[in-house]
Image 1: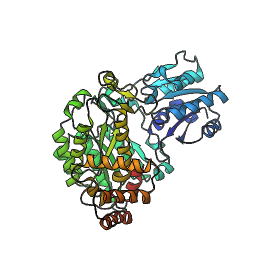
Image 2: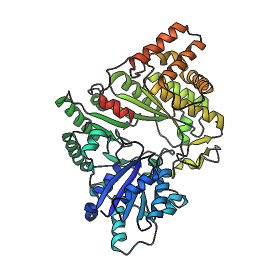
Image 3: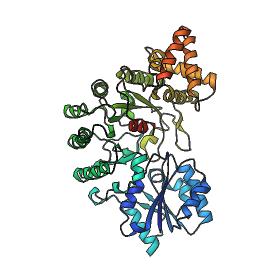
Length: 493
């Protein structure tokens, strides 16, 4: 074995699609290339030891915002104990502001951008000579038809135990400045027939959980309908062995043909991730986000009322021009639409994103260490930003966890953001913790808060107990059918 492809995934259940693309396109080097994945939190010495057990000449690391610090330690140790091993880095985290990074200084080579054809070419030059003089190599973007699809490289164990990531397209036509996809020129589709043939093969091998990483699944409605019909056909043929699919939707583009297709899916078969990010038109203009807010709101409401899809909708706090008050108004508006989950995100300054142009005008201060979270800006000082961070964490524990189905509407009342912020401030003051709060302790604190806010003690006890006893998933208003086990597993991942 000559070449090892590796990365540190956030969880074991995450199988790296990027590494499998590289392996599928290694050409003459494929037989001498192997994938070995690790999980963040593993001991550096153990990772290095396991890498060296393969006696590789080249190790290619996939570098992302969540693993760069730990991978930096791995690369540093690997180069100390085995300096003869050539280290090649790739991935979004090292594709921008490349020369500033310590991990780049320790590595031998870096590929920025697309690596599908550039990585095997670089390996040939390293192994056959002449060795490249330049450390940084700009990845060549080939036509998608020239890229071999990687789905046969998911193992039987991957299919059985891990999330299967797939993509029908790459890139994004939108220019939202907080997102790396803002640097793309457009979205490029893979050949839909070739792609669906690969999905058929995965399904025949037992894959039932498909997570699409496309930024804009519903950009091309004809393609979207073909993909959805593929899953509908599987559901019709095997109702007792259903598939589950996750898509990211553009919120203001939901024509009737797509609605009709979505309405055919049974409960537990479909999840949509929708990025609203902000309902503030001035903020949207500042970050170059084009969105029809009324259409987006109407579509989310329709999806919640007329489909069985699980709805996961994103908001971002800390965007330039967004005050706490305007964010709260957007949060309350989104809550009223009825999504199952509101993902409360805190702005991050991803390397290479145009959001940096607002740093000085809006006094934006970011943590210099991954994940580069905003610490303060012109409108939100540091202590207030930390309150928002705690809000987000407690929201996951109480609301998004689905553990307080009956209690949550009472807790939130008619001003959800303001009421939950008051609860979050009180909870932190009385626990001094944002993590590792056991369910029984959390339930006791929720109950205590309700009593302090004027609720009868017996009623509060009965209300919270009804949630703890049932453990139902939160559906915001009317509970829908319970999710199948593979959906529960997917949501947990």
